[in-house]
Length: 421
Ligand code: HAM
Image (tube, rainbow, N blue to C red; front, side):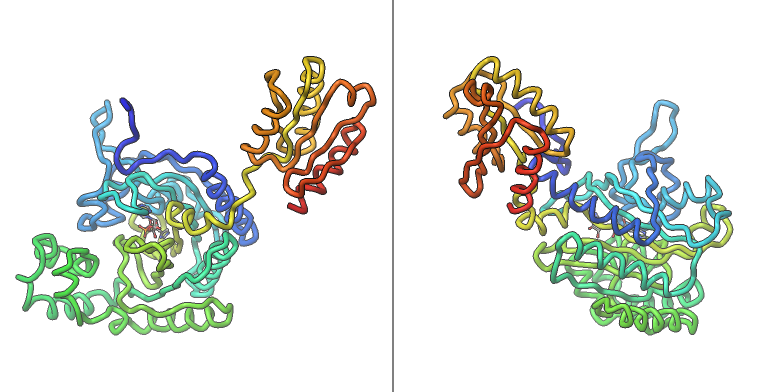
């Protein structure tokens, strides 16, 4: 084969696409119930949008961005995530002037030059949500509850919801000192990246995936023990509200996010069925980010769901959704023109209708209908046409009925049969 997709990129073809559409549909419906509106952002942005917000010392910025010069010699980057682009748009369009809360969602591809492996791609799709302008932990609880409802609405079960607080700029200096005290004595046992990050941003050492570094940082103090009174109060209230809303969760003081912009609440949802890439969604608060982009201080919180990680988890529950309601089998030339018209009329009534185009035998047409998984077959022959009727075969129940060649009657029969399948 001469031309292939790039490593870490993939085509998404039917029937798998029906899983994607199902996930997008459930999400859109629930976003509407919670007042989130869709936004569409460019996939290409000026590089500094990401470096300053995600963090110069993060793995994403140091190693994973698709960055290149455009023809005007500007450094541009394919977005590795949505939040930074979103906040750029939020500030650029002065959306902060609208009454809070403002709630947005987006769906689209992100790009990270990571080592491809199962459930980890270089182009992957996220469904993200961002809510702006409210500092109260009730919003944190509400958005986590919405995420839980989206994931269960999609059909996912047995997920772990882990939450923590990673503090704010007021609690961070004391925590950084404590962490540096712990790490300082054994810095030699860490990789060169961690050693370099020790002075620049020691918190990033907690996110290093190198096995020796993971072992060496065992017992490091968790940031949750160093929260200031405000962050602690915020986290305690969040836990209370999650209980009130019946959102099952566990507290993981060692939860670390790979992006620098987070403050206070951070969370991750994972599935044990996915092996090492088990995070299906993650997010948190970013109360300093709008400020960073030159807007007025505005709190924000959001999450993103990884599509490629949830599609495999729902595959089995989607059987049947990608099959035609009807396959029309005409017997002769005249019947095949009649079939073309009938198919067109039935499609306007919301049915998925396939029709046979060539003059194949009825036997071979039936085989084709079977292969497509058509739920019903309508046979139009010369005799039937003369009598003004057609034969309807229910392919799942194996039953056969005669119906007048009348759109209303046919729709009734076909819709009834689709509902019972
Ligand atoms: P993130 O944790 O970097 O957060 O990504 C969110 C989700 O995207 C992950 O939990 C995972 O499901 C999926 N994901 C990430 N990288 C890959 C990959 N290489 N292949 C497949 N799936 C992947 C963010 O991106 C934040 N912007 C989330 C957020 C929104 N925080 C606040 N608002």
